[in-house]
Structures are given as structure tokens and as C-alpha cells.
Amino acid sequence: NAGVTQTPKFQVLKTGQSMTLQCAQDMNHNSMYWYRQDPGMGLRLIYYSASEGTTDKGEVPNGYNVSRLNKREFSLRLESAAPSQTSVYFCASSRLAGGNEQFFGPGTRLTVL
Amino acid sequence: GENVEQHPSTLSVQEGDSAVIKCTYSDSASNYFPWYKQELGKGPQLIIDIRSNVGEKKDQRIAVTLNKTAKHFSLHITETQPEDSAVYFCAATPRGVWNTGTASKLTFGTGTRLQVTL
Image (tube, rainbow over all chains, first blue to last red):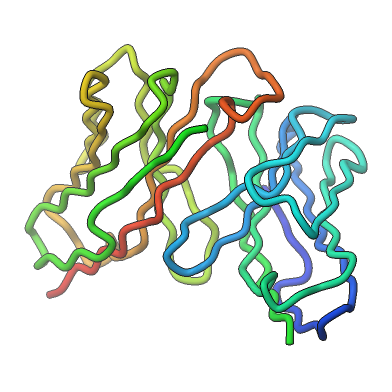
């Protein structure tokens, strides 16, 4: 099993450009999450999907959109990138929502110039 | 919503010594407390977790203690080794039936960079 995979690993964008971060899991998990990690701020939840067909906002959703394409895939879209969105983005999945172990992908390092 | 504070932000210990990282939380409804280890260039990985019906849990050199009255929980690493060097995150959430409110999401602390020196 590959676990949680993310593409791309690195990306540089110019302000105003758009892009989609891809995430897939092969553990048959129901719930998936997108976090951003900034120095000194830990991990902050952007959006999550408790189950296929549902998505909801996390702590810092502004400037992002998500799509739960199917049970395996959960994508994060930046419509008009801003320098404040420079960060490392992690996708995670868990068997169920709430208090269950979350498995994280390797991350995408995004720089917005 | 939940607020998790973590201390210290950096910790340096000599190999073989013990390391302790402390977290406090604000929401009395929180009852699931995981700890994650993040190595350089990788995603966080769960190393131990504790639920509110127990006060302590141990797994080899790692232990976690929970004081629900004081709303704090701690990670203890004994006999530290160089491979323990990493960033450690605590987190908290109410466990159980999922709902779409903020209370059911995992809230992370800001992390502790642990360095184990030879």
C-alpha cells in the first residue's frame, strides 16, 4: 500500500495563478483532510471531508476550494494564489472522522511569488 | 473552539536523557489526545495517543499522561536516542459521533523541535 500520496511535491506560482493539489489514499478511509503548515503555527485545518460526498470548512478555508472526487481522492484548489498561501500543504486520511488516527502524506511545498 | 498550547518550542537533551513535552487544552469536551512525530521533509506520523478514560499510556520508551481536571497532557520519552530528533505535535479533539461543527476536528499544538545530542 502506498498510503497517502500527494502531487506535486514542489510548486512555484506567481500571484494570481491557479493550481490544484492532488491527494489520493489507498487505505479505504472514509475521511480526508487538508492542512497547511507554517513555521511556529503547527498544522491548521483548511478543509475536510467526513465521508464521500461531503466537505466542510476548517480553521483557515479562505482562498481555497476542495473536491472529494471519490472515496480515494480529495483535491485542494487555489483559484488565485497569494503570497500568504506560501506554505507546506499536507493531506491526511482516517478510517472514520473524529478521534481516529490520521495518516499524512509527504506534503507539497508551495511558494507564491 | 479548541485551543491547544504546547511547550517548549525547542528542547535539546543529551542521548540517554529523558525529554518531556507538555500541552494544555481549553475544551473540556476533548477526549482524544494524539501525539505526532514529524521527521525532516516528511508528514507527521502518529506515535501514541490517549483517550480520556485513562490517565497514562506507555509504549516502550514513550509514555503519555493526561490530567483532565487540569486540562493538560504530556509526552515523556526516556533513554533518548539520536533518531528521536524530530518535531513533535500534540493534538486534541472530542471523539465520537461525527458532526459538522468545529468541536469534532483535530486541533494541533504549535510543535516542539527535539534535538538529541551525542
